[in-house]
Structures are given as C-alpha cells and as structure tokens.
Amino acid sequence: MYRVINDFLEDWKYESESTIKLFNNITEEKKEQKVTPDGRSLSYLAWHITNSIPDMMTKTGLDFGRLDEQEREPEKFENIISTFQKNSDTLYEQIKNKWTDNMLAEELNLWGENWAKGKLLKVLIIHQVHHRAQMTVLMRQAGLKVPGVYGPSKEEWAAMGMEPQK
Image (cartoon, rainbow, N blue to C red; front, side, top):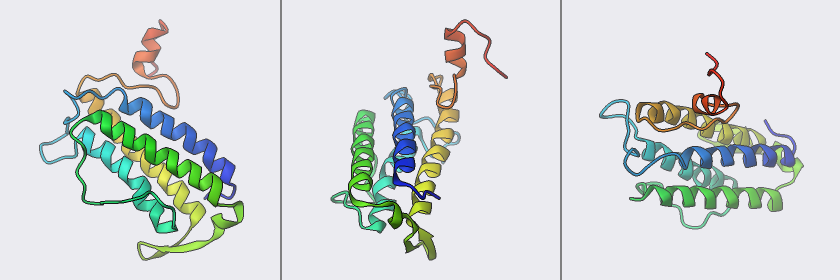
C-alpha cells in the first residue's frame, strides 16, 4: 500500500514507461497473437491494461472523461498506445494535483471490499505488471523482440555481446 504520493508517482512513471516500451514492440501483423484460439490476444491485453486505468480510478472520483467499459480495442495498435499514454498522463497529473498523502488511507468500497486508496494504487500497478508479463510470453511466441524492464532481456544481453542469463 502506498502511504506517500511521490512514491506512487515515481513507480507509476517507471511502470507506465515500461508498458509503452513493451507496446512499441508489438506490430500490426502480430497483435492478434494468442496462446490458444479462445485466449486473449496481445491487442486485447494491451487494451485491457489501457482501460483499467480509468475503470479502476474513476471509482475514486478521478475524471477521465467518457468511459465505455464495453468499447473494443481500436483497429490500429498505435491508437492503443496513444490512449494508454493519455490515460497514464491523466492519472499521474490528477494524483499529483488532487490527492494528498493523508488521502491514501481513505477507504472506498470497491468490488464488495473496503480498500484504502493507497492499496488501489498498488493493485493498479501490480495489475499492469501482471498483464505485461502475459504479453511477453505472447510476444516471444510471435517472434517479437521483448524489451528488458527490470534488467536486460535476452535480445539486450546479446546486443551487449554477452550470453543471456538462464
């Protein structure tokens, strides 16, 4: 749980930049990659991450404008990227300008449970990381380059002239 706004803002900046880095390696030709025919595609997961920001955070009173939870992902993957960036920037600015450290302990009833706002921020980040990890598996299956997030990826080790760690 976050207890200090700046701690969240620092983490959000890094995690959202990592998500953009991942999204930028997904091509139009490979965006429909799935593990199984009835599984979630790369574009579906990217759109889910993108829409989860306003979906989760409007419950706290933050404003993201019109929200259509049933809206399908855009045809062009670049539109998912730009919408993610917009939602990410909106979240960052609203948390920075509208919330205080003391507000992070305030509880809301979310999904039938009482959650502190600081917990919701933690869950928002963990949710993003969870789905990003799923996407890396699909990207490997599709033959796409996976960027390093918490250290070099296999491709980045090779670019440095080193053997990838096992």
